[in-house]
Length: 461
Image 1 (cartoon, rainbow, N blue to C red):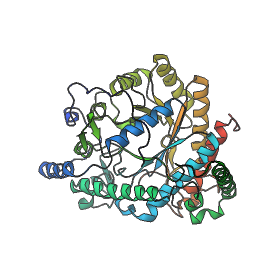
Image 2 (tube, one colour):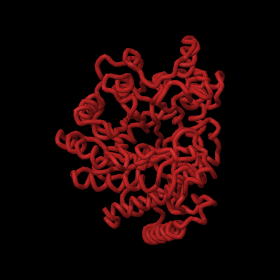
Image 3 (cartoon, rainbow, N blue to C red):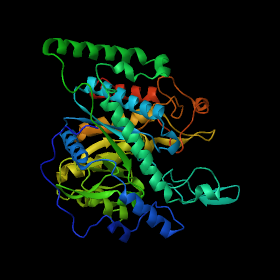
Image 4 (cartoon, rainbow, N blue to C red):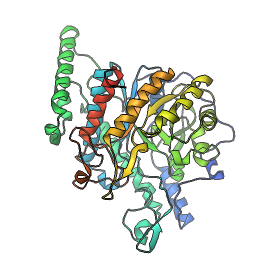
């Protein structure tokens, strides 16, 4: 997680009447109910005393990189698990997750001919919003599972109790994840001289394997040619890598919000890049109140029901100074709705001259349940929404500057379709997600190749 990029030149002023705890005066949706306020307060005190997970200079470096993406100088690749689990904090799962993002970024760099900004949906993605506060099975009603940050998926009263000590466990697992990712990158895991190290063994049978290996060979040949002429080139042995998560559970985020020497204001040091989900983006709500006061770059998920009259005040609240790199809008409309819902938003933001980074999330609007009870997404719908997003931005005179994906480096069968045309029956083979269906490695790589072809204008409209 390098911080070699230059710092933003314009600091944000401190918002009026804001503190890390001012969100508590607003309505806070999607928060668990803790039985013991004293136990929660004690866990929060302990968490506030622990070292931060990221640094302010890394946060500001990411903000500058996102400002570059707004100008079309970079492309954002943001991806990872729908919801991390404590049990998945293992070296194979973390390294495979990193491998798939590195391989996708290699495809994008090669095809788009511009730097790719890599942001992982991990090292903190332990909480999930839920449609209902409770779940009923066979006449028994218990609190919903809200992610490992809150409770356990087992359907028992003990497992579903909101446990404040999990806040500390989430910090510990996030730190372990980040430490391992940093060590891998600093140790040359991302070295462009050796992209073959990123291979995942099971993908050898993929229809895309040959095309990918041709690309790797071409990049290797180009790199060796340049170094024959100019000698070793600095920067190809490591990459910039940042983390992100939905900042859903505000007690956790508040405890890791700090002031630092030599920089004005407050930083959320639990992650480089927090975002607000669609369910918690109310203008007068607790999440917007918390987010408006932190110096991090921030993102907001934008669904098909959002109108320009709702979006523009939200932009004003979160980025009143129109600071470069500060605000990313992640549209997640669904393949069937994007053609209707997105153009008015693009037109309104463009008309007002507001500076944002537009990113497509083609996953969350395309979720369905199959006849055999599995929550899934069809690859054709994911691709369809992404195809339309590029076309709609081109027509509006705006720029699609990145993608936001739920994916894994594991050999799962959770999304239907793709190169091997996974069916409903295949879902039963390796469905591992606790919450939402993810692209597997092969589908992720295929989507990266489709993005490149679409950008080059070689895909049908």
